[in-house]
Length: 332
Figure 1 (cartoon, rainbow, N blue to C red):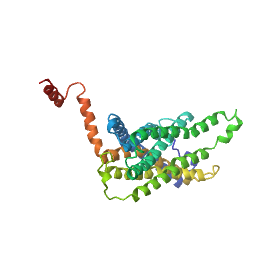
Figure 2: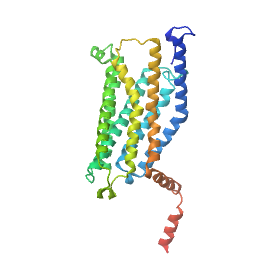
Figure 3: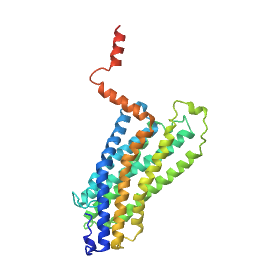
Figure 4: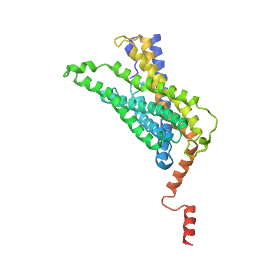
C-alpha cells in the first residue's frame, strides 16, 4: 500500500505531506488509465488482432509484427488492472502484496515488454530489407510468422530468471547454492540489457539504414508486391513512440541496479523514487493503447478490412443483396 506512515513523521511535516500528495497523484492517474485508456486499448488491440487474422491472405509483413505487438498489449491489459489496483499504485488497494501474485505480474510484464520491443526492432530491420532488397522474400509474411514465434519463445526464456528468483526465495533454506541467485538487481540488469539496450541499438541502426535509402521513385516502387508507402510513416511513428514510452521504465530500472542494494533512500527521495517508478510503469502500460490507435489511424487498409469483416458478420445468416443478385443471374 502507498503508505507514508513508514516515514514516522508528524502529520504536518514536509516529507509526509509530499508523500501524501505524490500518492494521491498516482491514484488519480491510475484511475484515469483504468477508466479511459484500459477499455480503449482493450478494444482496439482486439480489433487489430481479429481484423488481421480474419484476413490472413491480405496480411503484410508489418501487419504480422503489429498483431504480435497487439497480443503483447492485450497481455499488458491483463496486468494493468491488477497492478494499478494494488498496493503500489493506490492509497486504497483492493489486494495486498503476495509473492505468487507479484511474480506472476512480473513475468507477464517482462514477456510483454520483450515481445513489444523486439517486434518493433525486427519490424525496423525487415522494413529496411524490404526497401533495400525487394523481391528477395527475406522479409515475407511466412518468414515473419516464424520469427515472431521465436520472439515469444525467447521472451519466455528470458523471463525465466524472475521465476528462478521466486523459487530460490522459497527453497533457500534447503539449497545453499540457491542463495547466490537471490539478487533482484542481477535479474533487473539482465532485463535492462536484453530488453532495452540491445533492441534500441538495433532500432537506431535500422533507422539509420532506412534513412540512407534514396527516396526517389524507382521502377521497383511500381511493383504491386511492394509495401504501401504509408508504412514508412507508420513505422517511424510507432518506433519513436515505443522508445519514448518504455525508456522511462528502463531508466528507473537502471537507477535501481546502479545503486547499492543495501543503501537506504532518504524519506523524500524514497517517495520521489516510488512516484517516478509508478509513472514510468503507467507510460509503459500506455503503449497497449497508443500503438493500436496509431495503427488504426495510419494504416490505410485497416478500415477497409474492418468494414469487410463487419459485412461478413452481418451477412453470415442471410445472403447480402449483391450475393442475391449474383445468385439470380446464375439461375437465369
